[in-house]
Figure 1 (cartoon, rainbow, N blue to C red):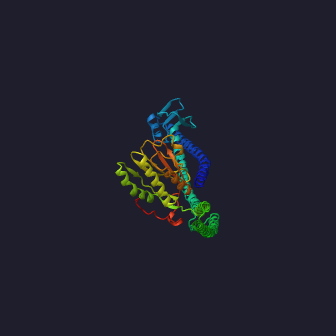
Figure 2 (figure 1 turned 45 degrees about the vertical axis):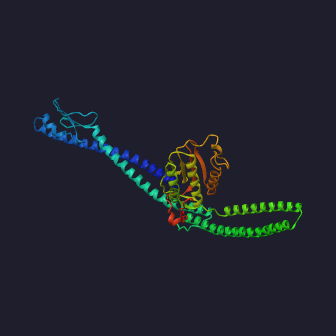
Figure 3 (figure 1 turned 120 degrees about the vertical axis):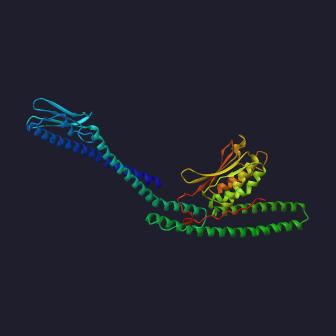
Length: 435
């Protein structure tokens, strides 16, 4: 929306400047031309009257007399042509090319013609045109500045609403937004607040239901397990014990299913995503892995970043640790970790790369499948890392096979959002070393 407002404002300003500037420039050129021709006509008439007075007085008109009527100054006549009544022709100055001329014939038959350079008139008109262009550019610059201010005023509340909706979707505490002064946006914010209250109440009810269901299901299942074990202990018949063992297996399987369903329900009711400063997670990884890389004769370079993303702090730290450990065991050379912005939706990409031989071609399509390994691991690390990133609404991909580059795509936050005043910050990631 911000770009659309800017484009629309700049387009409107450009149209206005063109529609006003072109006619104004043409009018300025015509005005300059008319003034120059009027001045030339006045100079010609003045020179003709003065020369006529000299001629009537019997004075001799020479080229030296005519030199006083020409000049090299901009806009002044540069050449004069005089034809006396007796047919004598006198000139002074140098005739410009191209030129404008004006002639005047006196009552005694004296003909006076003055010439002005066309270029003098052109540059005079060009100065006016440049003045119009400069005024138009100043108007456009002022309009762009005003458009940027207005666009920020309109779009900032919308960005805050989007960030608030993201927080609400992740199950976090609803942020408190100040009124923007724009009625429509404030109405959306109020409705979002009411929806957050209703959702919070609904989530609390469902969490309570999940806890009650867990208690109500576990109690009879535990009692059933104990009863079956008691039957197995009291019975001397092998057939009965065998049936009891099968029943216990079914009960244990049922307990596992209940735990899995309840776990999924809790994860669906509220994710652990929050605003996380990537630099805090990066600092943890530096302290945890720098010594291990140094012991292996390699270097770990984790570049600084000021990016903020929506993620689970512990989950993101585990994902990066998995990728760095994978690079340590399977890669070579320097391992670098960088963060950058990707696309127009403020997504953040964390890339982990090394200088090794990369991922084998036959392994690359299945690198994130469980139990898929090159032979020096369990094959679960990357699969679990991908599940953690997916749970946070992101994705983990193998960006390049040779050299190996793993990219973690996460939802970022626009830089124009004031994180401290609009959205509560995520908990700081505690630094801990791996034992």
